[in-house]
Length: 418
Image 1: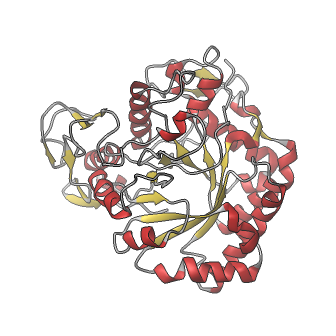
Image 2 (image 1 turned 180 degrees about the horizontal axis):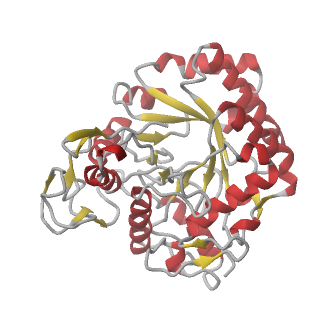
């Protein structure tokens, strides 16, 4: 089976929302022994704002609170949005837009940018990372590509000068088009024409401790090759038999973990020293609920299956076949549908929520252990063993108290650090 990565989406943002996921994380905490009750940083949401009908950022806060989401990725340092997140405890990845990369590549420009766009919001707004550009290396702008690493370095130095480099990481997000080879995952390798840029970027990550971000979309891989890739494999269905990697003997139950491991193998092939310390985080992934006539896989049903399975996968606190001890850290795309995004219709239908905060489609996640009331967690609603986002209400039909989960007679506080 050819595992094509399908990296044809244009550069830009996505937004995210999950009512389902963190409730499962809370339940996992509640059922875990006390020694396993640790702070977690697994599931986040992309909050894109490329729309002319979106609510003010304050409207996102109740949705995030209901969902128990404590990490959000923004695509620019919009002052109103940053102020809206003040004193919420929500951890933010803040985007440095492509159009300012040339400016912040200069140390003076970086210092000025940090002073204007970051410092005024600290410490009330919890900014934990800057994402410099988005999918820069797979664009066609040579000047932008050349500015990427200098911009990352200058911003890191500006943060260090303000004694913030241990508090705020600097990174950048890549789409999987940076890979020249991806199948099998063990053959993963970066495009040769990008190694000049990627090798020193990996050195930067290893030196500063920042993560390597990838925007990974099984949807694009399946859409590009529906005859070569099983839909169940792309939708992360746990019942699917999976695909073996004959070179390593590892078994890949779904396409997302295969994509991540292909990127891990590419890092190892390009920079073995960095590979020992650099971790991958998924900065975007999701599935559209609608699309153009030729986008047959973009349906509400498939979107619900993918996002439910993704949240279940993250809630298991497991890693990939290659890195089983490194739990998946994922930012789901997206919070809202964004009606002015360019490109095919699917680009405007990744949100879990409409701009009026109603769910785009029903989304249900089976709760481990079923029924309500037991297992050391608090719940309200029915006893059907499901946590639901239904089209009837923006509120889930079953909610858990997300801040605390009883664990072996104690209390585990659910936090979401970087």
